[in-house]
Length: 592
Image (cartoon, rainbow, N blue to C red; front, side, top):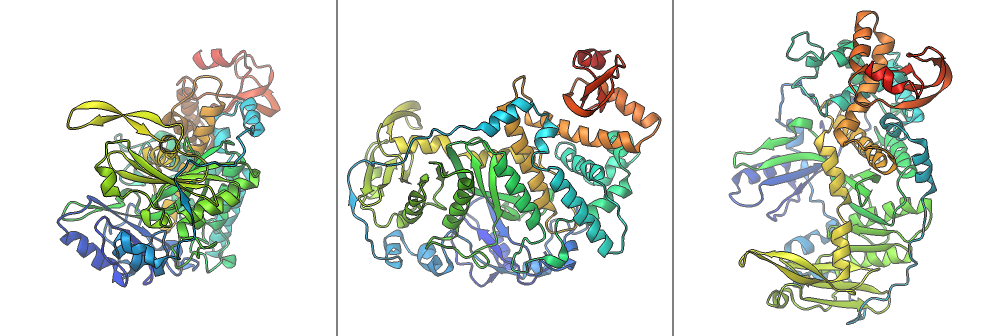
């Protein structure tokens, strides 16, 4: 990150005031600490000159010599604490005890009453005809992935990459087929990775990968990858730190929302895109792992389908609106995106980094249900039992109050710790029972659990599930551009979404995420090998993949061709083998 004014956000377990500090000072402080958490995260945003031309090459790839060492321009950059609170609130909210935080806010105007909530939202009755249409199409994994990286998106990337190469006096001549081959190699690197990407093409028997080597030449891949571009440099918005990838963000967000399952329950939270790829963890002497990366605001379904995302640029570059903090403003933007499909009674779940009584009020006026854990200083002085007093009571005890005017409930529940939870849609009743392990007695006991707590625990984990899926087989290849790891994150998110649709739409046996990614990678690589390879290499690929019994799908084709088995005309083909074959000949062709 070649910038002397890059803004970084340190998430610290041990609270300390980071304003006006440099990253180098933060790292030194972390090394000197003898206690605290074992992992530290520093969120970064692109440099001031992110819309400039030379920032296209300001980061070392996996072949570089810097390793995990940070350049001086980053070490001496300013560190700005980023919380959902604004900068003006930072001193009061970070450093003062909870009893004094109320003084920093506006005088309370709400009237709290001890009763259950009486919400006036309509019930969820919406159907999803688009998902029924996708089920009827019986799309293959490649077809599902290309719902997001569709023809328009691929053509756009090809045009911008060729334009950027032409501006550098290079006649690249990239085609859509070659770009898909490059995507296939990036996807493959998630489950087959080498210390250096050039090892895919080495002739050494311990590293040579014939699928990659036969699909594209090494120097051609390196040339395409070095000029890969996603925006016109002459039309960049200098106020947008992510202008270099903004057109891709807009296109993927549109496609994600277009094909998203229409559901009642959604999660909102933070995700992290590591900046340094597989060297994103810098080990400190005291054994604390330091991760650098971009913060991504994410809205997902409860199962982990990414509906909407936006990379964070910090409070210095994104101004909150509607009287909310930054996190609350991002929740409202996600809700606005959801309501483009219709003003339905969606139910959004998020954690205490976003929740406030003010946010619940804003969402209620928009006709959207919301539930989330909440910090005490954001409850607008709701008079609940003191946490210390509640801890003395048996587990499962709770206290609650409702705002008379806007029907917003705040509940304080004693479990292993005291939790505050707020909702504008669901209340205490019916109170259920949940089983919890008692460490002292080494038995499981039943404790009371309010209804809003139970539903929150069931539905809040969508962003976490998406993160787990992405982390399993994330793209390992990274390049010189500061946004290369972010592009890998987008590809992984699109594959996760395609796999989620496969789980919903598949009538037959479902494949796991690894098999799904392998299928897409193999189809893209073998398809390019069929057009670029001659003689023995292409025949070897056909022979090996035809009988592997992995990921062969029959798809419709517009132009009739000869069946590879019976040689009569057919309008279907095997998508992996790229051979025309009748449905009745399909099984015999792949085992004969």
